[in-house]
Structures are given as structure tokens and as C-alpha cells.
Image (cartoon, rainbow, N blue to C red):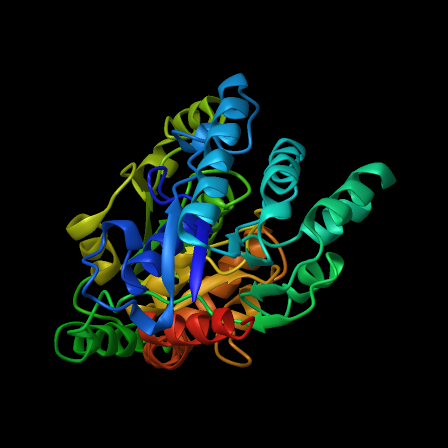
Length: 399
């Protein structure tokens, strides 16, 4: 199967661009750059147009005049590949609910859709259907339906995502979980013993046993540092949890490590202002963007992963998959696709970013979860091997 992949790879680095990169690597890369003697992996022959419209996170979804010229250039590449290599299947990642991003999608579909037999949408973001109904005009909705159709296949990440695919009248919908290479293959020998030891020690403290020395619990927030993603709610929740522990005279203290880039100067300035508070400064550490070994060290050394997101396009974030791979107990929001990612009846879900609810949930999860169940869930649902196999089967189903 020949597939025109109209999607960008990092930079900028976020879940969607990373998953596109994993897909291309898993299918053997761009066919034009691959040794012709090597057959395509999993039966998918990719031709990649690296449609990178933004240079940084701040640019994503924002209007810039140069993006119009980029759209024309990328579309010209796609049409050329259609005729030069006989590629009839057009793979595209629709935007979340943002006007500028939607207009970009319109232009791409107007210029490219007529030349391809099959349109395949991969819904990495969620919420477009609701946004179209509540935040746009009937004219915008009509234009979206006409320019995208027919959608031969929609690949969604969860049941929640079905509404987006159905909104564009997709002929076929396939559920394919995201998946990543196991970042912690030595979990059983190097991490599991420490996780169990820390879990047992926390349970004793909450049961009233006094340890020889006070215990510190490392809480990790690893995401883009925005209010929507939950950095401010996470910080306030940890502060309130510590006050509760102090009121109960328990020799236990939480320390929050936040890692990721701030997207806006306003939110960065607000965070810096909070750091002038001695209580905040003693509890919350910000490291900026981390990757590679530094990121792995943070995940290995953490005791709990905190991600109270209310991000509009949140769907199946890679950071939660990474936290599960490292066997970290998780506290996150009951938001969009997130509840479907975790094991059934998982106790670490809260309805919103309410700091009191988050603090109470953090303290509860610390005493009932060691993280082994989420590690097992990762191995069953979110490995890159499973992801690529199910993705390839869904793509081949349109031929």
C-alpha cells in the first residue's frame, strides 16, 4: 500500500509529531530515502511531506503570513508525489478546535483532496466535533463537511474520539491506541523493588507508624507548562496536600518537580511570581524542557505522576503512556479520552482542576497504588509493536 503522509515530525516536539515520527520509522521511513531492495515494513510504503507549519510551540495554531506559502509548497509536493509515484492514499492529521488551524485544513483539502482516491484522517487531537457545533457558524461547518468528504477511514485513539470521526461522516472508523517503545525495559529489576519499598513505607506512615526519618514523595508534572495542561493546579494541589499532612502530623512531605516549556510569557511570569512565595519555592521545582536521559531519570526517581489537564485537544497524551511504562501511580483528570487510557475503576481520576479534590486524590493514591497495575496496562495496550501492527491493519483495510 502506498501512503502519502502529510504530517510533520519534530520539532516542535509534542505528542502528535512524535507519534508521526514513530509511525514513519516503524513503516521503514520515506520510501524515497530507503534502500530499494528493502521491502516496506508491515506492507505500508510511505511518501512523506513534512508539513511543518510551526517552528515552536508558541507558533502552533497561530496565524502567520508565511504559513500560507508553506501550505502551497507542501500541497504542491503532495500532488507531485501523487503523479510521480502513483500514491492514491492521502493520510492527514486534522486540527483541534482552533479557527486558524481549521482554515489551514480547508486549504489543504481544497488543494489536495481532489487528486487522491482515498482520504485517511488520524485523530490525534479530540474535540473538533463539539467545537464545530458550539463555536463556529453553520457556514464553517458546511465548508468543513464539503472539503473533507468523502473520508474513507478515520483512525481514532479512543471511543471518545468517535464523535469527531462521525461528524465528518467517515465511511469507516478504526480504534488504534498510541504506543511507544518501552522506555524502561529494566523495570522489573531496577525500578519495581524501589516502587514497592516506597509504597510499603508510605502505607506504614499513613497507618500511624513513625519512620526513623521524614519521607519525601517526589511528584512529577511533565508536560507543556500551561494552565490548561494543569501546571498551576498541580502546584496548588501539592501545597494543599502538604498542609493536610502537616495538620495530621505525618512525617511525609511532597515535592513537585515540573518539567516542560512555558508556551506563553504571561503564564511564565505568573509562575515566576508564585516562586517568590517561600512555601511555593520550597515545594515546587521547575526544570524547563527535558529529554533523553534526563527525562528518564526524572521518571525513574518519581513516586507519582500528576497531570490535571483540561487542554481542549487532549486525547491520548504520550506523557501518560510514559508514566505508565515507568510504573508510576497517576493522578489525572476525568477529561476526554483519559479515563479510557487507565485500568478500569482507576482511583486516580478527578473531575476537574479543583486543588482540594486533587490533593485528596493524591494522598489516597499514594496509599493504594504502587504502580504495578499501570505498568502491566502499558505492556498490554500501549507498546509501539501493538500500535504499529493495528495501525498498519487499519490502513490496509481501505484497499
